[in-house]
Length: 431
Ligand code: RNT
Ligand code: ZN
Image 1 (cartoon, rainbow, N blue to C red):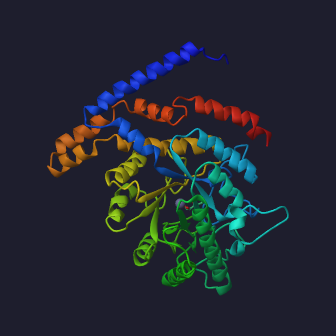
Image 2: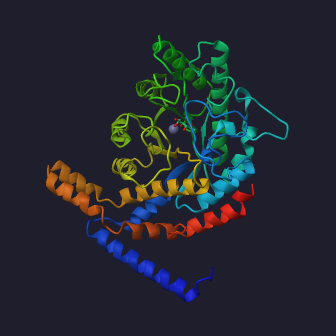
């Protein structure tokens, strides 16, 4: 491809800033300050999940993915080593605007050649390379104990197991993860959100629904008895409605995790928007929880017909969730993490589309005249409220997004995708 001349680049830049100036004026008519919105968004951290890059495999086992979650597809170029995964993540993150945080799972421990340490005994040193990676890029790290894809998952159970040996093994894993989370926070200077999610449940009608939940409660309490600084480690519990193979009963249901978090100081509820019945909306649950919890956490995903973890798009519910966070003025009370995995398309593109989509959703929420709209609601001016909300949809948001991308030093046009295609040809297809 011929390089465009500097004159053309200059003209394009000029045209872009003219477009932004005109968009800015348009938004100003509704009392929205787009410059302020852009400035605010730049500092909001979004946790980027390492597991999109290798289909939730990790480096500590070569067995199948279990726990009732599934990746589908066999697109070439999957990352198989820590170096590859880091390089791929780097590529994706370099194409996305905004502040990022690294989100790791315990199964991504990095061992010396020939070394193997089981999950109940992993140590901070097994994550030293990740810490270096994060620190070099000025990122914090979030963490997840991995209660799946392991031979100690017995009859589909971990922390709820009636077998004390199994339960203890996983409690010890959780405790090890608390120590590692605190290490991340101390090293990076940024608190670490540690999310507990288990897939424990039953395929068919159980005979005892309370027993596993009482054991789950006891197990999380035991994990949290590991001493840690609450300012540095933010433990969360993630609920779920069902998983593949555990359709009839899931121990960590919404009521269980919400109640656990409510009754344990410093524990946050984590809502994954793929983990509810199809007509339930996490956008509506966010403000409900914010009435009670000082801080909450989210896994942001896109479920198609079920908790399919499709790549996040800039769609209506995604926008609605972002709007709730912004209009509750809770950008600093909600820990936002992406959680999707698609193995059927270029994985770097999957990452990039999802990260950019959430950034778009937040920016679009920030350029919404929220105070004005709220006033209409409070004055029962519902006709105008509908009209205004519809009007907002066709304002020149694309030009504000382009400006944000440019200011963050990333492409606003599709040249980011050209870069991924080049990376696919030069790197991924050679693996
Ligand atoms: C599974 C949960 C969980 C996982 C990750 C890999 O349904 O959403 O958060 O996706 O921990
Ligand atoms: Zn999740």
